[in-house]
Length: 177
Image (cartoon, rainbow, N blue to C red; front, side, top):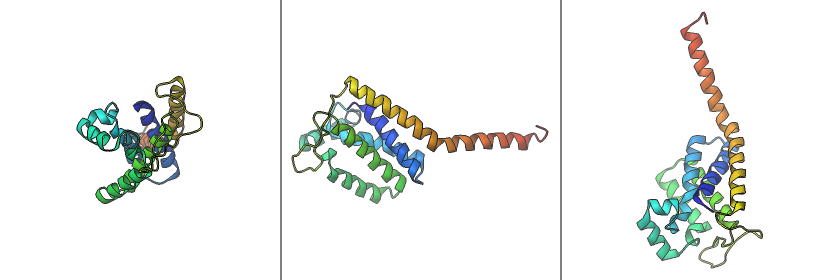
């Protein structure tokens, strides 16, 4: 999948998780976007690979593409490191959610992922698509709709609170209003 599809997948999944938890949605979504990009550090042409080219080349040289960074072992390692350095549940939950969305989207491609690394067994769905295909564009559109739905559910509270606070401020400033 392309970077934009992974990003919207991270947003959609993070918003869905925020809807069902009490985690800070802003931190959750930000971390979800980061988590949706992190697994592709093994690919020099990815968004994160272009941002950190030396690290990307090193990871690709040691592990190859869609192996260690697309595994359950990598998720556990990231969860441990985040818990140690940033003990914030919303950040950890967002990163893990974004990474899982990345894995699911890549399991829908013909290449699949090495989910159980170091065992060299590729995991993919029975029906797959090619990166950049028309089907990926449909998936992207559906994820946009999911993001809109959960975005209104989660962030609507913030919007309505802001509107109410704004209107209350005007009422307090101008009692004759």
